[in-house]
Image 1 (spheres, rainbow, N blue to C red):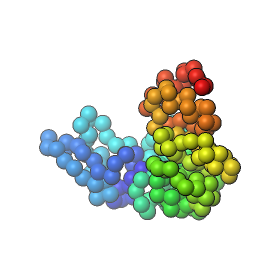
Image 2 (cartoon, rainbow, N blue to C red):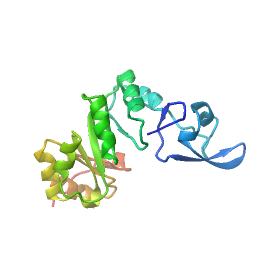
Image 3 (cartoon, rainbow, N blue to C red):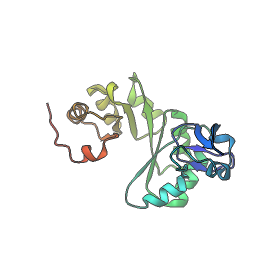
Image 4 (cartoon, rainbow, N blue to C red):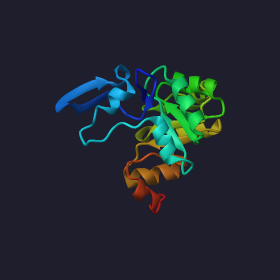
Length: 194
């Protein structure tokens, strides 16, 4: 999540948008534009960047929405949007301070920390920010990480696992969730525990 300069949280992976503006390629930072300007800034395929409020409204109560905060200092905006929507959400971030701030603002929400390398003490990291989820890069997950997170009541969610051999390994290690780009295949996958 990122926020526009008028304080609207939008769903976009990168802090910069690459688009065509008035038939010319353009590159702008989301934080530098208003929502109105962003709406007038079509992406290459003609789509537009949705707001978090629109996304939560579209999902409704059909699923839990996992919100990754990428930009600094937008925790209050994100939590306000989640509270106003009434949607079931969890928030996580690579910046563990963000997870800690979200938990302080909104104690009832589930929070998580993202790791892209092998943390020396995952349990300590989770405890330090009162997080319940460890989002761990798939190739760094081992039995010790799973046991460490589980020892403090946290879940381990692997990201991003797109290969069946990864799914089998993760299942055998006891991970609690898998983030994938192959949702349909994972939903119908027949596990091969080795």
